[in-house]
Amino acid sequence: MPRYTMKLMGLKVYIYEDDEWQNFLPLTHLHPVFDLVCGMWSGIKRMEKLYDEVIPISRFHSNKCGKGLYINGRAIFYTKIPVDGKEEIFKNNNEIVAYRSKDGRLPQNAKTSEVKATLSKYPWGLIRANKDIIERDFEFANFLNKSNKSIIIDGNAKLCYVENSAKIYNGVYFNTENGPIYIGKHAQIRPLTVVYGPAYIGEMAIIDGAKVREGCHIGRGCRIGGEVEESIFLAFSNKHHEGFVGHSYIGEWVNLGALTSTSDLKNTYGNVRISLPSHSMDTGILKLGSIVGDHTKTGIGTLLTTGCIIGIFCNLYGGGTFDKYIESFSWGTSQKLTLYKIDKAIETAKKVMQRRGITATEEYIERIVTIFNKTRKSIPGQNI
Image (cartoon, rainbow, N blue to C red; front, top):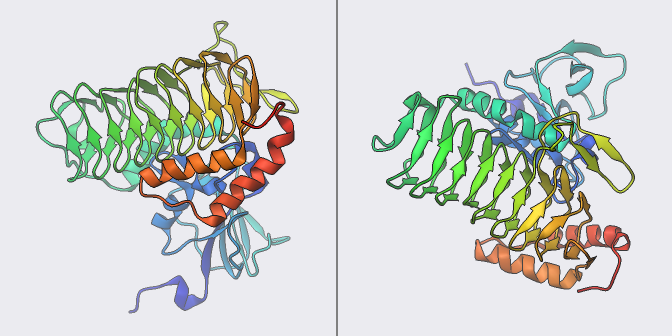
């Protein structure tokens, strides 16, 4: 009997972003929401492991919609929702997880079913869920123990999966008592590094004598030193020196200078509030560090207050404690911020990306310019 495929049936699986993508700014300035990571993978990569092919629908994609299953890009689940069948809506706690449609539109008066899923509404939801999702992803992928016998491991050795091409130096300590550890291809775990699970260390990442405490996702090509805890680093971001980053979400191509540190707990032990241009809000959680957009850089000794939100392409230096909200393309000190000139910002981004063998496409540059034009009026002062 031939293997069932969606192609033969004329059905397709789509992943889309709903209006909640705006809640994830500045991380979603340059990413669709399903490209954001929680656990071991992004939303779209996780769905690609469940289904043969997944077609993205977002602000950045112009794919045509057809008959099939439409998955909310914020949804995390592990049991396949059938692609074939009548129009139907699948929900979790009254939020749409997915729906079957004949034309891409949300069906009206269709049957509604409850399914198990995790959906975050804000970046701190991804941070809080990260530990649990790393464990669930590890189990879902059915990883088997591939640890080098010379590694010092406290806990279940079968929960430490090391790709063959990864290099683990002498003097490294792993602890899986509270969850699994995954070490990606060509990663380097250098001497005096300590890693507590649940933790994901991505392909080509370098962990250089760092304390990686539980609940961390270190993305592809990141370079990490100092201390990190319950934080997510997207690809090619650096925190190579001493300093603490906790309960934070760091975008791509970020560089945190030596001794840059995030506060993630108020002295009053109260809920963390975040500040936005139009309002502030109570996150309802005790610990939250910083949300940092792509291509942002900090200088030596930068201090980021509890619940700090920093846009894309910021350049912060001079030490001191910065405000809780910093608009994209801000340049300067904690005392004075001005506008980062767009041509210089793009020039630097191209240099940084080329050093890692990545070329910035024209489409990518256009996105950056569009965001700059929307935000430039929010920042006082002259271009740098």
